[in-house]
Image (cartoon, rainbow, N blue to C red):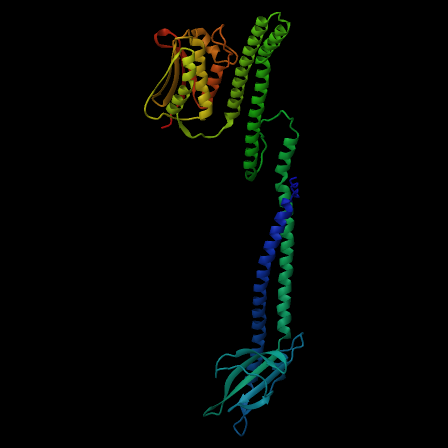
Length: 464
């Protein structure tokens, strides 16, 4: 036993779009938060470094020389107050004179490499086990003749910087989360509103009766027009198939009733026959009726095939001359049995037309069979292919009794015969007409050469 295929759960377009949005915004949001964190670190350092440099500058401005010509600095506590923060950061300082003599402060405090008279230089370091931010400023105290260089170094712990960075990052993350939630809500609402035309389309299809296969005429967004066009195309094909089925069943019931009645009658006569000859005659007539029913059924099936092919797309070109030559050759044995001279006349070059070879071949077979059926023994039937301007002509001509001019129009109608007597079933020429129309052509009935017989001509557009 073949395993049953697992049924796939229907997915929600709304949830799928929302999932894509959340995944995409999560990835982009993570990248944005990383960039925000870097920018927050730069911003916090820039603000705190400015204060740190200002404190070093205030201390440097209080430097002077004592009586021994050494650097003396009175540390203003206002410079240290500038570095006070809510984060309770610790502040350290040191002042170095030449040559590397520590004037005051913490002698083991790390320094930055500052240039004499240049801007403050900043560096990150560790002091007594805690991270600090260091700012060093190199200046000189004048002796009137010379300058005594000194370096002021200020440092503070980084608690305030970290808290500022964290606050900026958290506010950015909160704004981003609110934006993602708002975008998700907007997508949910927008998809719900955008899907309303599809709901209306589904309701319109559900409300239709089973026999209503007309095209859907419902305004839909441009993205759904392809779907509606596909549905309409399918409904047209389905309507064509159903119409063909109805025509086939109706025609079959109409045309097969008589042959089947003949078969039943002959069977009843064979049962009541008093002699073997009478029974054989009844059986022979019943067999002829069955053969007639087979021919009717074959023509009805061909008509159904023509009806079903009405919605076909573009077709590749075929060589009409080669097709007609092969079909004519297939009928030569039958023509010999009937004493009919069947021949072919055609150009040596190809005659390209756009058609389905099987159906066009059946149309030619119907014309040849129709000619041999009605022309009689010793008749001449000619199949001819030629080009006339932009048209390809496929002709079957015979020298039989033909069809009177007044009956030619009705001869191409289903179940109408060009002659009131004879074994025809009224389907051959209508089939040819419908096949010719299917391929952009038409059927023309004229009298044959010398005013005798019938000239049946299929006119098709030639391919350049």
